[in-house]
Amino acid sequence: MAELEMQEHPVLRAERAALERWCRGDPSGFLEISADDVGYFEPFLWQRIDGRAALATHYEALRGQVKVRSFEILDPRIVESGEMVLLSYRFRSTGETGVATHWQASEVYRLGPQGPRIVHTHWSLPQSDAE
Amino acid sequence: MAELEMQEHPVLRAERAALERWCRGDPSGFLEISADDVGYFEPFLWQRIDGRAALATHYEALRGQVKVRSFEILDPRIVESGEMVLLSYRFRSTGETGVATHWQASEVYRLGPQGPRIVHTHWSLPQSDAE
Image (cartoon, rainbow over all chains, first blue to last red; front, side, top):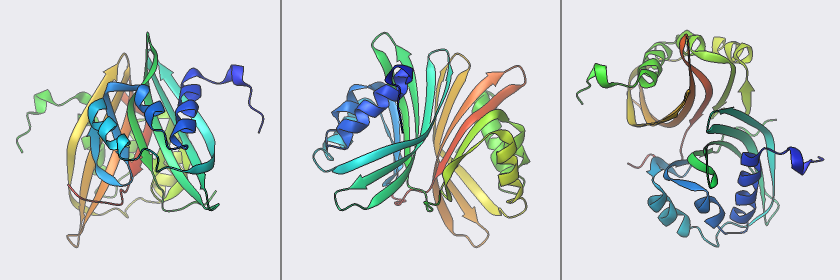
């Protein structure tokens, strides 16, 4: 799939850069672009993690553990108004053994003087991977 | 838990009203407050459903099938800027047999002249229900 870098939305570009680091086991990419008041849902914990400090603790426990060989962002969709930007996409990650995992992702970013910052993240594992 | 209706955010009030109808098998509450450009993630389908017409088709297939005896909205969180309002919460639904199901919900609403309209919905079933 051809990608024209110049046309990529700044939020998608920020997300992709953070994902590239995440998939190499480095959660700092996401942490650096998370707002102080970030909220975070993932499939392995019912509770929402609230605030950057709590998220940092959570992410540090995962440092070095994520080993994704390749990933695809599918059907990215941007909805924006004022300083708020919603990004949602399907995600396929391929692990070292070649097994693929299918995710749904919703991110809400707030644009600010330092660039886009994540105020909310919602990752989930759907029960079906049918395309 | 005491609720002071006057203090409830209009978006949470709209969501709760739609949930009450949904849990009685009537998906029209959510459809009526969905924007034309709504996007929708749920646990049973990897694909995002895009647009109100497609969502209406999806919802109609569920009409009369949802039978939730009671539900709880836990840890609702609102983040707003301009016309965009993010609502996230944990959700517990109790079915007719008394079995509880645990969900995570993220909704992005856009405020407009007709009231709040949903531009994005993300429902998921976490793998853990630990509180």
